[in-house]
Image 1: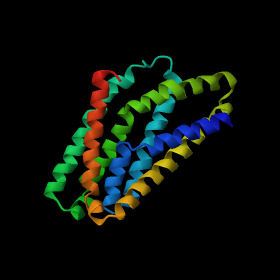
Image 2: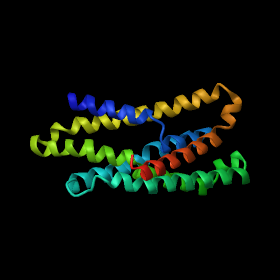
Image 3: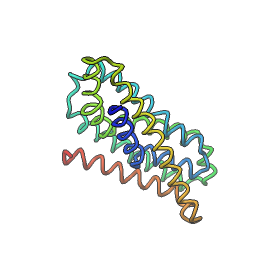
Image 4: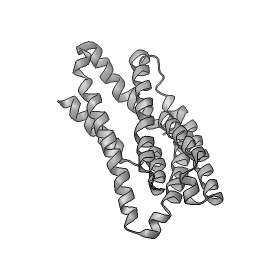
Length: 204
């Protein structure tokens, strides 16, 4: 029970903190593309976490803990690049054209996946928290640690969906703000990308 509560608690905190996936999903929600937004919010991190679970399981002892510092450069560059691309597209196309643009859709999914994979927090979680839990499972049996990961998945995705819904609902209370939501989401992506680079540069 303690591992279940620990996993769920950490998942909820991670899901409520706005991140790149939240902003990309929110941008789609602003264009009334809820299904696409939810797929971007849920699909890429499931795939990434599955890959990192396997990598941590087999290679935990060999993965350097400084990798979170290194991938932050990649994450920041990816986010800034996509945010710039989306802002340029906004100047060339209407909201409806952006909503129906397959290029933007593919770019969103690709960037969401890369952003999740290169987020410093992702590597910190797997190397400093999930890794030791898996190591504990080797000693006490993997059935003992399954509740931790089940709680984390339910807590994270439940909280992430609620967070995006709350941001979209809050925007709907003010019509002008809702009209600018796509712009705001991409500007926030620029800020997040810059923060990734800053964290990498200053070694935070």
